[in-house]
Image (tube, rainbow, N blue to C red):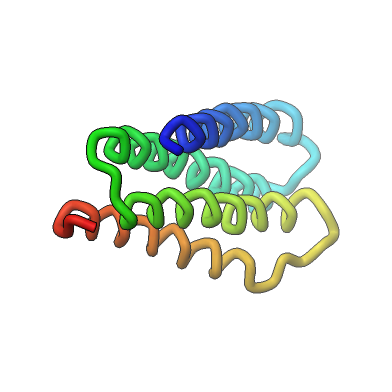
Length: 122
């Protein structure tokens, strides 16, 4: 399972670099500055949580726990919902609605699960 999370973190990180470069170079004259800022927020959160997911995978390899597994799941789902909904909001005519705050709450839950993994043995 650890290898799976390393792969997911790596894909998230690589896509964050690609999306950031695409926003900075390919969409600069196409999107408004506020839309570019929203897109950049999605990229920033995706990259930060790709690194967090990588940390969780390393910790899980040393001492597996349910709390670390939950943290990994929350980080992955949170990135997909939070960053993904921002990308959809900016790049399509669709309105993702409550996906952004739900994704944000999953990211917070991931951080709380990571903290719990350090104080509990489960």
